[in-house]
Image (tube, rainbow, N blue to C red):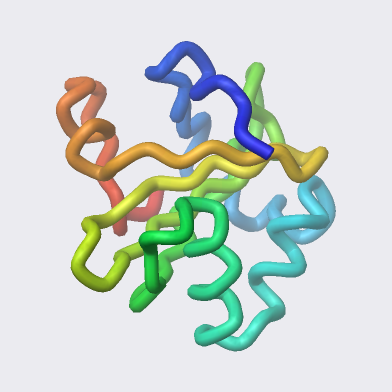
Length: 115
């Protein structure tokens, strides 16, 4: 299910080191972390859309505080269709944005980079 992109700029990566909190605040993220790389790529590609064949995933972290506490963030490369940042909230709702759009927001956030 797609939801609003937290006001389009809402990829608010809260604090460094929040990844340690990932194992319990977001069971959907926990499941992704426990998948094989191939299955994880397929699951995240499904979130992006039917045109994506996932080739590379990267766990960016879990927000530890604020409005996005517990939200997990992943990067995904798709074969011939670009790269995406995917936000997954603790209830399992997700939204994806192209990495170029994320970088263009000017907030210093980039795909395939830990926060």
